[in-house]
Amino acid sequence: MKEEKLTSVKRFGTRYGRTTKLKFGQIEAEQRKKHKCPYCAAVQVKRIAAGIWNCTKCRAKFAGRAYTIARKQEAPQESPQEQLKETVEEPEEQEDFQEEEQEA
Image (cartoon, rainbow, N blue to C red; front, side, top):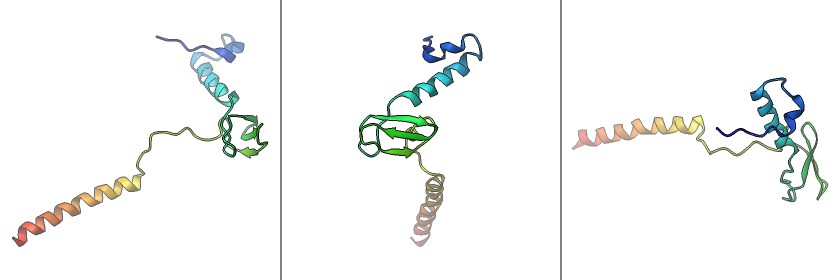
């Protein structure tokens, strides 16, 4: 089993538990790294305060999420409405097929 390094959370010592410190370390690393600017596309954006971000290249100051600029991109999923449309369309196709058999 590979252990993750406890980089900046070493300052807590034996307090607060392992999982809490690991989660905190991941969040802290994410907020302290430089992010990509949505205006000039340079990787120069730093966090000023909770939800306030500043690009050192184009000097744009903007609001974002507390620990990151935006949500991480996840695999695209269908919305519940699209799933519902698919389930509604299937019975209609079966009814058309049954009507064709009755006509013949």
